[in-house]
Length: 177
Ligand SMILES: Cc1cc2nc3c(=O)[nH]c(=O)nc-3n(C[C@H](O)[C@H](O)[C@H](O)COP(=O)(O)O)c2cc1C
Image 1 (cartoon, rainbow, N blue to C red):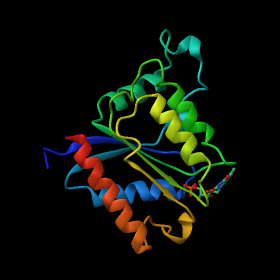
Image 2 (cartoon, protein in one colour):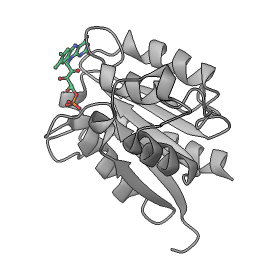
Image 3 (spheres, protein in one colour):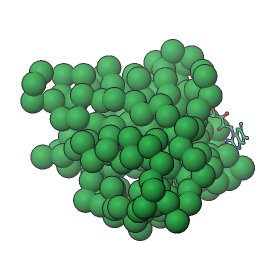
Image 4 (cartoon, rainbow, N blue to C red):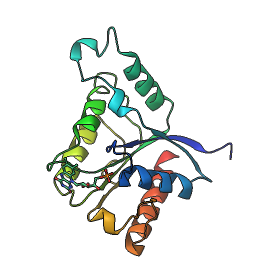
């Protein structure tokens, strides 16, 4: 298992029983032989983005987040959409990475797992493109009606979704090499 690549996973939902968080846990288990996936569960602790503190007097939680990104070979983001947009907590976390280019050249997966998701998904894709997340257009999946496809424990109970997630993760592994 020593050759496993380190991956940072981020859930856009901070809800205690989040489907997105559970889905990330299921993906971590599914890919355990090849990927060492750590879920960064502290995005809610990041302060509101402040351009004046992006490079000087950087908050400690932001430094921790940036270091976790720097040590990762790739990133998996799994998020719902809120009010047809990207959850503010997630967008805030991404804004802290703009000046330091933490996503630049890093293979990144985007899964929008939501009731609908058709609005937040392309908006977040565009943000990830502009911060130069690598292979993002290839490594993306929209899972609508997620609560009928992923159960409360994170099991993917819809066969088509399961195969789409597997295919996505296999593509991700190829992009990491
Ligand atoms: C404040 C709020 C706004 C929401 N707005 C949307 C929305 O615009 N589109 C959508 O697909 N789902 C929306 N939802 C529903 C979420 O997609 C659904 O609750 C999802 O399961 C949340 O992800 P989670 O289980 O990981 O927390 C919203 C939920 C909340 C709490």
